[in-house]
Amino acid sequence: MFVPCDRGGGSASLDFKGFTLLMPAVSVGNVGQLAIDLVISTLNMTKVGYFYTDCLVPMVGNNPYATAEDNSVELSINAEVYSLPSKKLVVLQIRSPFIKNKYRPFCETLLSWVKSSKCARVVVLSSSHAYQRDDEQLLGTPLRYLLTPDLEKAVGGLMQELNWKEMEKVAAYPGINDTEKVLNIPGGGITKLLFTESCLKGIQMAVLLKFCSEGDNIPDAFALVNYLNEWVHLIKSEVNTSSQWKIPSSWRLLFGNGLPPALF
Amino acid sequence: MATFFGEVVVAPSRAGVDDEESAEEAGEETPEDREIRRELEKKREIDVLWTLKSGASTESCPAEQFACSKFIVAIGHNAAAFLSSFILDSVCWEVVGVVKLWNEWCRTSNTTNVLPTDSFCLFYRLISDPTVLLCQCSCYVAEDQQFQWLEKVFGCMRKKSLQVTILSTCPVADYKTQESTLTLPSPFLKALKTKEFKEQICCPLLEQPNIVRDLPAA
Image (tube, rainbow over all chains, first blue to last red; front, side):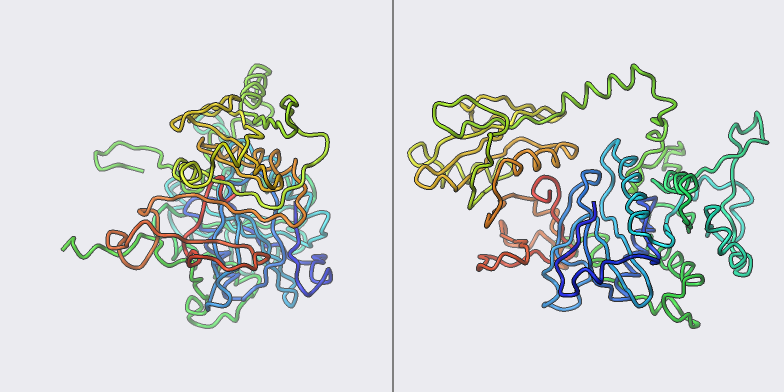
């Protein structure tokens, strides 16, 4: 699945043992993916490879993080891996939706790659439909977290200190039986599947998600990436953290082209 | 989500994964469902049939991979028509292969005698240099068939020193630019190239944030 790029660094730069894998779920508002774009762009991460997979819709374009003409001509595809060894961080970016019936094989292959490359833990950035919140969830922070039991042992205490809110479970049969609770992440794409499979496979995984709706999701992406930063400290958190994240050049024209002058 | 008229609808999500898909979990899929899904998958399989040796019958994969130095692929009606008008003729080119596929948008057959208005996917070889291959693909290859198309077509070729050129068209309205597309002189050419491609390109490169999708992207 993982195909390394040919870079001068050789195989030394492709050892992810002990690294944190940061990845998005393709979810409502594409918030996870936008947040990952901010991380890759701000930390100026190097592409180290891609996933050769038949599970995602194909797409290709030129480097979405281009800053000048000389770095704007590298091809970029739908699932690419970036790394920053100084922070023991490896990031997967997914740029297109899943092909029908293929999201399950993708999750299986991804999790077995996580195990074989010996990543220490996985952090999934995701989102969930804001309109499906219950009365209590409508108040307070729209950000939630989830930890697999293996990661709970390691960092559960830290979440208490940060005053983070764990994603609530909902009744399996609402109105009929309120005692049986299940995890439900509507609009979260593969988030729930990745989380439940990681619990079963003993993988240390955290899910960070935000309740949101489709629309201009750039502010949601900033909120999610600042939430992540409270824990993982990717950039120095000063008073105005939002201004320290670098918006990639590919975010231009998200809402259409310029207007034809003949309109007026 | 409430619409203007007050009805509540489920908004399609950009995320692309519908909640209905989670109902396909193993426990809930009956043997009949599985059988239907398998039959559908079989129906959507692609067959690539080659006639590489003259007089030989069509075969799905030649015993040996054949050598290919240049492979030009024209995807879509416009690109296929370009090749028909300016490149292909029955004197210099011979048909060596055909793709048979079915999806909701089109069906191709394994006949090589096609009309320009048909949906087809044919392979031609230059008679004077049999390592030059050309493909005219005017049918739509669905997203779940694109990977299969790639593996089956490229799987039959020896890929050492292979140069691939892909010709395709996109609507001008899809082009993202600071100005309005109304004032852009069209049609216009843009290119994408891998870093291994060292030759001169005849047109500017595709600027961010534009992307290419479907079979040309695959």
